[in-house]
Figure (cartoon, rainbow, N blue to C red):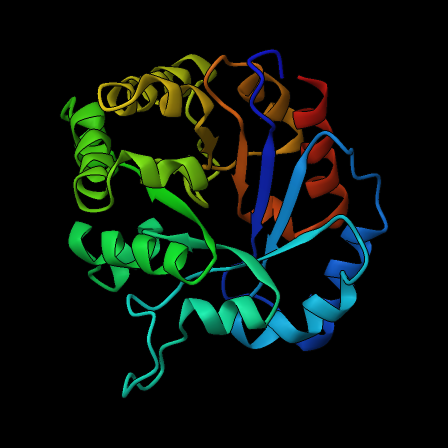
Length: 255
């Protein structure tokens, strides 16, 4: 990309498939044409991390987790998995603040900020998700909502933490619905987020990678990734098909 930021494409497999399917999908992606100019991450369900780590060993694919505990230390946190544990499993990234966790599991900005900091403390790069609902968008509150979600983490972790973080804008109304923000509308939000980070540190904001997530497909990826402040994608449904995911990765390399 001409802005100097290295593009990143991350596939969020969500709660899909079984162990065999996860290994097969990881193998298919790893054997595809993976441009050296793009960072490519796959984020399988927690119980499939081991199988996927084995399938992508010695390839350019990187492993990510779909969530992380808000605590770094060991303890009586039944059901949680800490960032050091994820690191041991081979993860370099972890998604935090995904809209499905905010909406379905009532994670608030404070919890998301804790997870963001816990990921970094364990050596994991967080992919921080922000996004507005359809009602918030129709009320003209998109920029206010995503700005507040980002600012909560800046206030808790400090802007310097974003030297080792990725931001992802995922409009809730476009996730899994087939609806996609127009490229110009997505760019407006990405630019707003970069400007907000720039109020704390312009240099960090300029190097911060901001991904778009919301029904990205091979057919719309190039237009989205051509926008000045869109540095790749957080891919849901299309990440479950190796050919589609690889086409999106190639689109990131070509812009």
